[in-house]
Image (tube, rainbow, N blue to C red):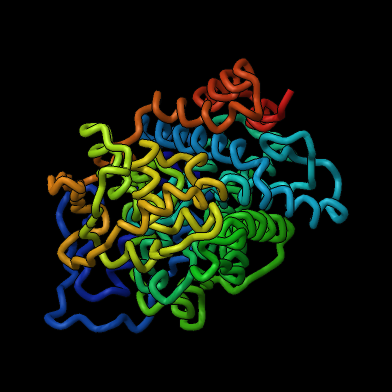
Length: 496
């Protein structure tokens, strides 16, 4: 049996050697020397004859990765991801979308095995994973891996926590599985983004299913072979199209990805087989649904570079590309005590993705409002906020907000980055107010603090849980590493 150090060295060497062998121009670092090995760079790199064994390398890493090997900052970000996910899942639990899903699925749910966060009902683990994935995403207030726009916790945590109520697992093992799941889906997303997203796939669903399978498979203690099959079965279940944005269907995608990933892991645990190269094969996942395949993003630096540390949390309950505009609008509103009535025109220079994703000029529902830069800027100026209460049906149909949003104009500027905005407000007296946002609050450069995450959680839970329950649930998330059973988090999320 390998020592811990030799196991990590073996994993690293396997990944680097595979990439170097299959990808011309990649220089692998020889273990223990700190020097590049002799892999000559081709003057005009050509596509490799065959890709590295990505599915096997990734499965090997997931199976062998231990909680004890996680750096402290990775564990901390994992707890922040968990806290944010529980808060948004509890907060979304009473939404009409969840109520609709319960009416549809309730008659067919199996044994009462798992908790629906924020509710008293219990469903079988498959349907519980789906419902919790829906409720955590319905507000569009969940975590975001900004490099890919993946919301990883929805699929991953929903699958892992439902399973943790059926198969007992310690808090440390649960957190390890959650982090591995986030790492898996974000790395796979990196390999195909943006091409995969640009053609219309909702990457939270299509990549999230791998994260759910990895987390569930880790809790189930799958062998390396079984994990290969779990990832392969996950690859056969991509779900989610961007056309769904602005409807209940959008939150269906992470919910379905959670259930599909759990489904894959459970089948693999009983030796339900799959092709062993489902991610990288010529007719596998990456080649079928994307024109870009950068397998180095998946396997290089496993256990050393953590995508999960790049996860971010939303201060505003809407599409992430609107956040810079909202941040600018709120700052100008507060600095100048604006109400909206004194404004002649609001103009923002923005990246093309802003209108592509959030260009709904006349939203008719709260869900559509989350994808309207016009509504978002208008309501941010009028109310100084963009939380869930600013995206209800009533908020979207408010006459004063409608009047102001008709004075909001977007100018597309390819020189503006997706994380930036240049906003100018012209008042009726001719005065101009200006704000340029380089990085919005909630980004990796201006992250939400622990206290801000707690305040967001409490605001979401206040009509569902008592103050004491909310405090206990927040504490359970922060101290997940100390729990003898991760299921305690689910139980603490049930209204008293």
